[in-house]
Length: 264
Ligand SMILES: Cc1cc2nc3c(=O)[nH]c(=O)nc-3n(C[C@H](O)[C@H](O)[C@H](O)COP(=O)(O)OP(=O)(O)OC[C@H]3O[C@@H](n4cnc5c(N)ncnc54)[C@H](O)[C@@H]3O)c2cc1C
Image (cartoon, rainbow, N blue to C red; front, top):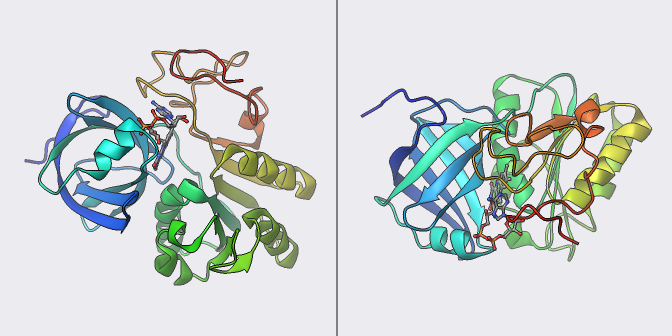
């Protein structure tokens, strides 16, 4: 049944398909019962366990996809979920990417997941864009074949795919080669800080997707609220532009954990 529910309402949806990239990296597909923009996320509930945020990694052919890596108790339990099992899904939440001009899409590690949907959207809209993706090793470069189709450039720490080194060097070179109006970034926060600095140096805009500890997803509980400015990353983010990033004093610095304390 295809019910139109408000985004904060919980839907319980059966997993339609699981795509296994490796034992620790899988994509889960659900029937598309709601619209989502690239960069938005959902709160995924495993009954009896917990509820955690995951970016939408694609929307097509009537299905919504999320891609997860096993890092702790929730994501490990998710790896065991099979087609037919029902999970709770709330969302979509937050503000995603706002495409404009000539884009450079830069992703690192798990940050590649939401960029897959962004790239599909840019392609659909015939936008001008290039892609640079980085990971430690080849198996972590998920959907490499799909990205290669749009001419993506790759970097790995061990040189197993693309050039050897970090994705930032690749991004700098691509910016030097051809004009770029905006850098879209998702990945580890040190990489995002470096991208912001690159955008500053080149006097171009950037839209970077941040992660902060999230519980409600709708800007009520305050878990992901930034000191000083009061920006709720779950509501005003997770994708922030350059002017918004200037209002996040803990960007690139220790931020709050599940208890609300700052990590050292
Ligand atoms: C907006 C957003 C989008 C995300 N998209 C993805 C994605 O597409 N794929 C993916 O694999 N992961 C994504 N994550 C991270 C994902 O939420 C965590 O990997 C997951 O919650 C880990 O839970 P765990 O119990 O397995 O591990 P834990 O051992 O509990 O946590 C491991 C790490 O995950 C992070 N984390 C844990 N709980 C939360 C929470 N409630 N909110 C934010 N971060 C948390 C923390 O950095 C923690 O150190 C996203 C996080 C955010 C905020």
